[in-house]
Length: 231
Image 1: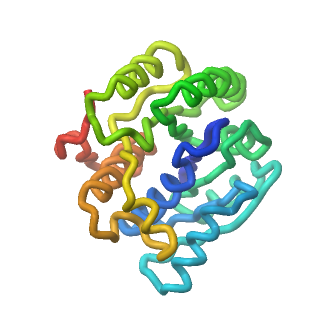
Image 2: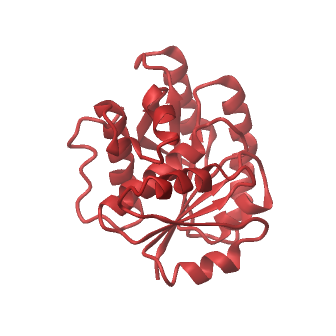
Image 3: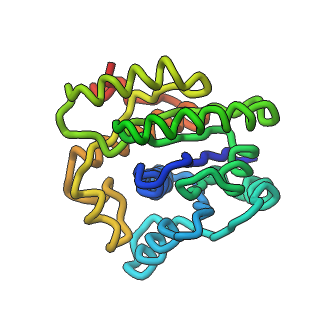
């Protein structure tokens, strides 16, 4: 039985689709048999996979689109793939709730901004309801699209907010910075791990190490060894 990792939060513009796509490609490049489910009506992830297929990039990641209640679809597909990655829309939706019901791990990207933090409070309450049914769901927040200034006040405050106010979530060590490399990679269907920006590549590799460890699919996570754990 495969593992299921969902990327979702009740706010758009957090880098959720970017993370799900890059994570899926990074896992496939490590030899995992990965399926990406695009459960977002905007179809961003499916479009990126289509660009990738058109350019004949390896490794191949299969992708399907599914909206509405996706529980049965996920249960069927996790029997055929080692890892199912789900990208949901940036809102509280049937897709997000049903994906969380059948996932092992939920990753919620949060930008270090007041509007994102405010939205995260409601998201935390919604996930608490879901966990009354899926008691084994592990939930993680990641600070995404961050300012390149590591010591920014917003970054520090956001870390403290997640730790103190989002009771259902643990904060990942990894984070992503607002980089052109992520935007440039989309039209080519490539992950940043296949690009020329070593910093963006290191961010996705570190996130992949960390999530595979949480999913118990990695034998020896090395994100701490890279010096990328942000205390």
